[in-house]
Length: 152
Image (cartoon, rainbow, N blue to C red; front, side, top):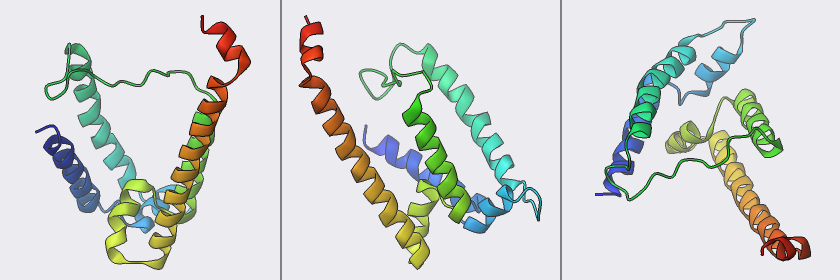
């Protein structure tokens, strides 16, 4: 059951993207074109997403544990740091340049559009490089003499 719930949530999310038209890069680029033919429909989709998710998170936060797991896995970091800002900037630049972000890009793979394929391949390479970078950074921190001296 614990694997079916995320699958159903992903299918609902994907259906919402399709129904709202947010898998079309032109919709996103139209929203970002505030001085041209501005299309506010993305703002409506975002507002609807917030209207559903905020109460859901508030309810989940009041429960001692989730229904289908032993514990919650809430993010432990809450500060705004350089990796967060850099990641948000890269996300926004990519979104603004081609009108795609990860979810709609994966959904748009079904079109076999060369631009979408290039975007998804570049995204996968970036994710792999980030993973390698994080692992090497954590290994370096663990092997640091300062870390060993302060561990106890």
